[in-house]
Length: 149
Image (cartoon, rainbow, N blue to C red; front, side):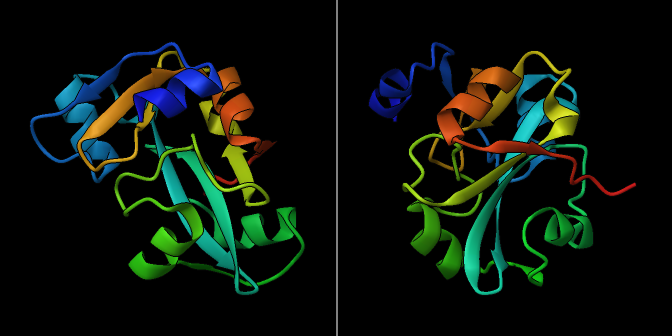
């Protein structure tokens, strides 16, 4: 994963956590940061096609808003097999770096004011430090407000 991060221009360190970081709360506790500073990379299906959402750890994704922001297709959460098929990563380790070309990615606007941001690094116990601008650059995502209100 370090090679992918280097290739993408990510300078932040990779940390292997002692415990699981499958959830934003687990990662935040292990890092000693607020859960909002965790970028969770989630996979949904929009009309059957995979869609990646990089959301703030304290946010829940509003799937109706997300549907309106893309093309109006119904949005559902992907299962573990669909997540791995779409991204190559397991649930809990989906990184915004190294996603397949052509995969639709949106980055939640709620992450914009946060620094630092910690994101998964391809393994359920690995995270790396990043910034909002870097998340946009490495994921090819576009900013969308998808948090529930």
